[in-house]
Amino acid sequence: MSPCLENQQKRHLSIHEHESMTLLNHCGISVPKYKVAKTADEVYKIAQELAQTTGTSDVVIKAQVLAGGRGKGKFESGLKGGVKIVFSADEAKDIASQMLGQKIFTKQTGESGRMCNEVMVCERLYSRREYYFAIAMERAFEGPVLVASSQGGVNIEEVARENPNAIIKEPVDIMKGLQRDQAELVASGMGFSGNCVEQAADIVAKLYDLFIKHDATLIEINPMAEDASGKVFCMDCKINFDDNAAHRQKDIFAMQDWSQEDERDHRAAEAGLNYIGLDGTIGCLVNGAGLAMSTMDIIHVHGGAPANFLDVGGGATAKQVAEAFKLITSDTKVQAILVNIFGGIMRCDIIAQGIIDAASEMKITIPLVVRLQGTRVEDARALMFSSKVKILPCDNLDEAAKMVVKLANIVSLAKEADVNVKFTLPL
Image (cartoon, rainbow, N blue to C red; front, top):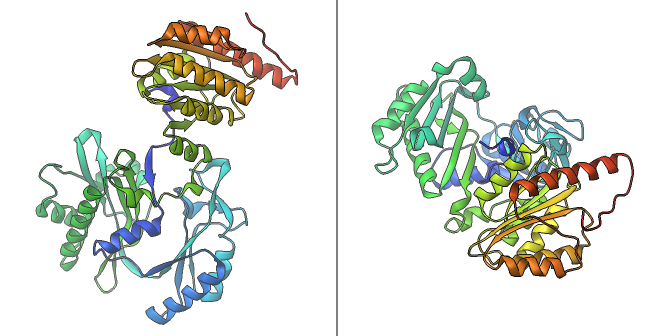
């Protein structure tokens, strides 16, 4: 794997827990009763309604944020934990008021945190035993695999590390589909017994159908629980979906909560760009994912660090190029920009004009190194040379990478010393 991409954001749609639970409900899978609230007053009302329905005032308040580790997270308000058991409607309201409109910080969110705009108010079920179950697309098995354990309700990564024998893996032939004996084998292996094996196997089969039907890449139930009456429930649910299936899963992708995402990701999606923010100082604008990764690698070879992965695709327009520049320059860490375009389907002169227009409109003051090859490249060079924009053209990618790394370092050092640097051509 490219060293640039080791910590990149995953490009799979993730939806909120309550949306995942709704999908489970629609498939006939047993889940706790729940409702979603956006205000503390709504939480109070829902808690009272659940008390009348369930016969107990105990409810569970769950912060709805797209980040793992919320149970051990901490809110700006000082509240610790994004999943709380409460014992009255008044307490539910109080706890919710400390979650809603507050950022939660977990191991996954980092220093930026995630805003909690909604909470899920659930009935409290009393688990007799808790198990772990998931379905994932696994390269090693060339398709879906069922992952299960008798140890649920805990961090499964720790279980796998400390007791790998506690993890069951059952590959599924995607052409044949999940067989009933496989579902029963997994249910028995998890530790279910008697009538619960059949219930659990039914749930496993329904989850697999959901996984295939909606182009999921992951369904994780932690825990799947057996209550005191012997009924099996999915107590928690996380589902990720393949972004490549957005065209045929429009209802699913309409659930995407952009308030939980980097604003730049939203802008990139609207412009039809593939963008991933990274931690470096060199903005990259490239066409083609393979060329983008190669560009980031060669920047690393010469001691630099990319600020982003940005693939404008094979048929980008001048408008998309302009939007790409806006995305790159909106990152205050960017000290220089490298454009690396191979014009096959895409004409280099159109890209060059887009670069010139964007740089002129935005009055880009940081160094801009451009390497163009392919269709109409001579016309592109003529456009860049005749423009008033300070573009540093370079035909060789290795030389372009060396140049942009040096320039980014110069700008960074100048800013640290509070010195204003201006570049004139030729360098």
